[in-house]
Image (cartoon, rainbow, N blue to C red):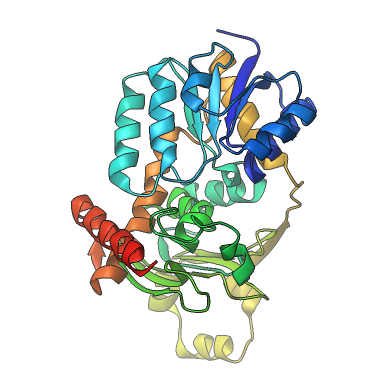
Length: 384
């Protein structure tokens, strides 16, 4: 056991720079910067000025072998997360992988299986939205049966507007070979994780995905996916990167009520006085007509509104602190690394359904998904 965790930051771009700032300012309990790694010479110059006393590497293996770090965080392109996680764990270094855990389930499963052979090490994934008090409350409401058994889920999340210039800023961005997808693997992994964390994993997926619909990119910028759940419930997930006015609305309907989340800031809980099935079988048409005319709502359900304010950066700090606490004293992880495969599986299923033009069952044929992904990568190379 150790008291202070020395974190190696691999990739000092937007996310890595954010974490370095938090650590340098002493905002994360039990954790400091141990070393920084980046292959960009400009980043090396920046770090020499900003973090002159922190060892800098342009090769992450050298950093892992340096004895300067107890743990790492992988702020690099998605394909590299599993490889870097495994190489850290092999050296008895704790691993915090960024989302998504990888591009396809086969590589994430390899990471999970290796991590399982090192139970003494901490393996976590950076799902900072799991620390968001709103989504923690939402999960507790669903888990406690407040609105009964889920009948339908709807999440419309289009607050990811990205102009063409965003995609043009680097060659690997929004490519099959560089990122492994578009909005599903770049902007929406948190929502895919929250969806399955709160509501469970669907058993079937049918999707309509548009590739390069409103942007000059090879990958998806428009997604509509329909889900079937084991209990017969249905779901819809819609996301895109071309809605400049964006909507964030998550609705969960149960047999005892409904919960609506607006803008990830407000939860509206409507609890039925009687379960819907009981209302259906016992109410007279006179009572039903009252409802149709908008009368007697208070006799049917009660309503509660909960408002949440999120402090910028607090969720990222919470994940880093939780990771450090697990290393230091065994505090349970908010997001164990093995959970990272679920969101990847859901994204892969949505892609595969669109690739094949038909409904896909979960679990699906992982070799088939990888073959289809590799076709996309090859097509991309031949068209470039």
